[in-house]
Image (cartoon, rainbow, N blue to C red; front, side, top):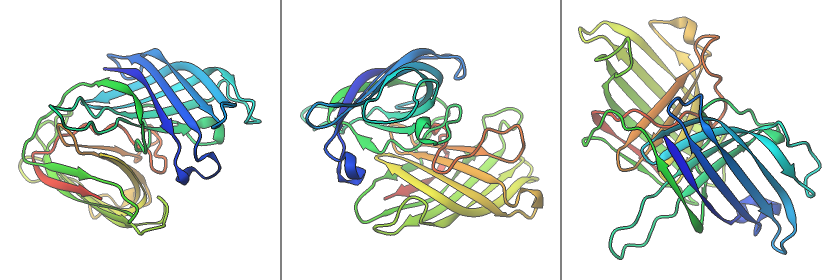
Length: 301
């Protein structure tokens, strides 16, 4: 798994007092084991007149890339931030990178995208987790080389974001490829909506997950409500809380997260916060989408 490149752009009006500021991101990282990567990151944020607001760099501490999407975390080792009165060195960060690929023929290129989570502002940062790549760069290039997984041509993920709000609807499934559940049928249903003008936590919707053995025996059956939804181009992240489980009532109140991608291969990812040893679940953050469904469709607008 690899992520390389340097790219950036100008922050839009949705960034309030930072609107119009140029930002840039440089990443050079690789990994075989997602929790033992090598590599570095470098971020620069200036004001329109060239004054430095913040510049920081450090080492990558986790990296998980599948197809054209990568999520990485890191720790800041050097920083200069005359415009921000806070401590950055030693703080964690997370970056989500979407590589749009090279255009064919005369077709215009879809921009690469990047999303970020800054620990120095108090946001939690967990291993191989990030938010949606909400920022479309307008110069530079990111290259992502990710591992491939179970392929499918039957399912499709359509992910878009616009000023009218955001919406996801999904019913899909396939068979597990993870030991000890290889061959077990899985089914996912998600639906959620953010009204125009609302934020990621003002979301309404729910999810339902079932897991069976090949003979029909129920392994898991739980449903709940979506509590946070973030969309960035062809990638969406949703988190939620279990509200009902006929087979395991002890799951009620437990957190979950999902990730969705529309790309060269459509994928879904998930994390369960069911046991103390599970990875933490944080609002609007999740793992890189990794599972290619055998059937179904996901639509995100």
